Image (cartoon, rainbow, N blue to C red):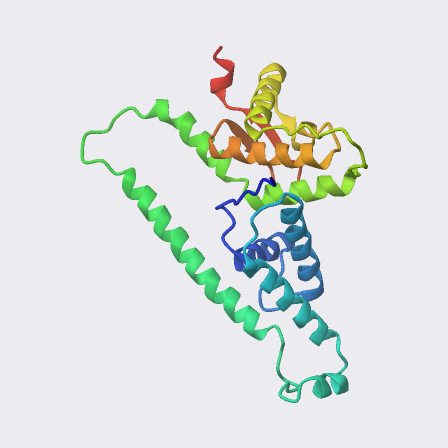
Length: 250
């Protein structure tokens, strides 16, 4: 049976579009549809390669972007013949931009409320206490949150472009499946032996598609369990992985 995985960190197609707009450092009011569409489809393709349970809304957004792109490529005269209701002043991106702006408002509001909640949790009605022992734990938490699942998915997509995936050949030998739990243990053992930060690509020594997919899902699970730390200095830079301090206690 095929193994399907759904990652809750993906908040929807609008969230992915905002991520791409921020990474490309472009204005939300002047979206380069051709470039955004290409980047969006690359991410959706990466999700399909990973056999993630992609919600239908991602595919609907992909169709919407392709429709907007085609309208913007049409000459003025053909554009009017294509759609009689499409006026010269109307921008096919307008409805999408309005949705993005509205979504961004709610996303920022949710972030602000979350920050207030965290600030309130740090308020104590008692004399000051020594919290130095928690400083390192808080630093690790912030470091972990600095790299999103989208960043990891982008790194995986770039790696796939550099590696040539081996297509399965016709054979009578049965394929040996690698459980995610086993791959997680292998990664932790590798980090424990190296005792230093390693590049994300170093976890993918094999070019077989199945092995790469299982490795990526194992990394995400280790991130979720805070068993590893992910570092990235700035957008598009290399991603490094280190084991949490707990794996070096033994």
